[in-house]
Image (cartoon, rainbow, N blue to C red; front, side):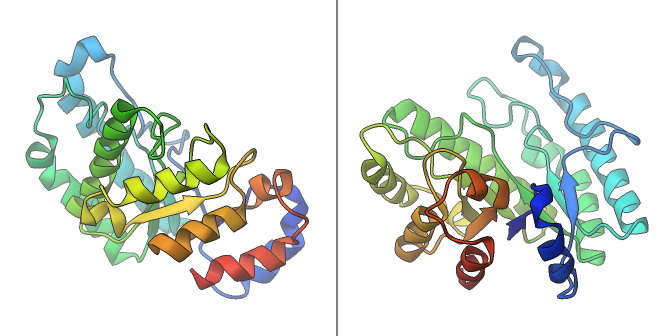
Length: 239
């Protein structure tokens, strides 16, 4: 996977188009509708209404994308607001099953590539047990959502915290990876970040867990060991 986010890669991007690259965008088509609406924690009784609107909008957006030759889309983590929160009592897995299946039909029938990217509070390698626990639940929500759609798709996260040193953070990631449900393990991919964990660190994680790597070229331009984009992309493709 390759996240294009830097204007300096236009020439290389045009080359990649020659190998049937699927291009897309993140989360919301603001000219159509809003598929990432959320609710306040003290208004969880509105989750069904908001989730229904989000999924109907997501379906409409994907159909619009197909009409405009866009076959890659990042689905919002807010599709089901607060889905992994301990206070959530709404059984979204059952209540939303029908709509999730309809969205999945559009994705499969048009060979759309999809991904998801949990937010900054999903830190699998945190030193705090409660953060690890909530991160696992959040990752489970993402994987279950894609499962209920019946589609392939990755859930990408950063390696995360570097407290205690980067080596310690990498070890914690690998240890906590073993705690994940199988459907999360099979979808998880690791993305390089702009400050701490470089592409080579993500490749180390891949070598020990089998977690594929997604390359963010803007992050790589800010945080690297002098490797050219073409070099690291070639290594990432192997994963």
